[in-house]
Length: 99
Ligand SMILES: [Zn+2]
Ligand SMILES: [Zn+2]
Image 1 (cartoon, rainbow, N blue to C red):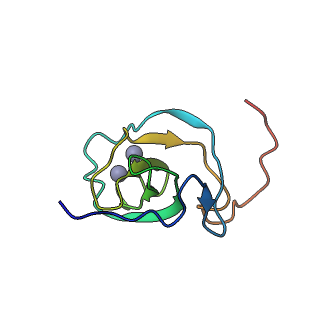
Image 2: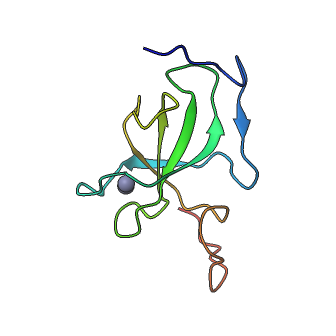
C-alpha cells in the first residue's frame, strides 16, 4: 500500500464554488455506479480526504456526496445533498419556499 500524503492536514478546504449542503438522506439512486466523480473539498484525515460528488447523468447527477480516501474508494456512504446553486444550473425562477 502506497503512503498517502495529506495536502491539508487537520484542515478543511472547499473548492471554489462549493460549500456545505444539507443532507436529505441516503443516496436514492440505487442503480448508480458512482463512477464519475468530481472532488469538491479536501478533508482533514485519510478517511475523509476528498469530498466528491457523483456526476453520473442518469444517476446522482451531482446531487450526492461521499468521502473518499483520495482514490476511487469511498469511506462513507453516499448521501443525497440538498440542491445547491453551486452544483446545479441556474434555476429558471426563484424558489423562496422553505421546508
Ligand atoms: Zn451516483
Ligand atoms: Zn445518488
